[in-house]
Length: 137
Image (cartoon, rainbow, N blue to C red; front, side):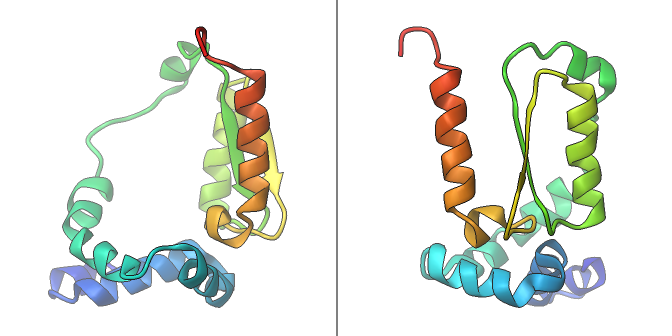
């Protein structure tokens, strides 16, 4: 991905990134994206390639167990059952570091859970927000 981006092939770099995030089920994820995302979404991703590859790929921040210990708010921690190992490791770290988190493994989804199984996250979010109302709402 980085080599494609550095060579100026932003569309190729974004395609490679999407394939990595979408995993082995990328074709299913891409079909779901085509149905659920607005027209021109891929072109917008390409237009944002600089942000992805310059800012997001090399973040200047860290998040430690000590940082997590200061979070007292409710947390909804979701992962698709078909999510790649390194994304699943983040899910497991959050599960360990935030004992108050509600942990959900969504069927029929990978990291692209909002596109592949939109009903699952929507139901979990609705339930989460109904159980954890903000004061005054």
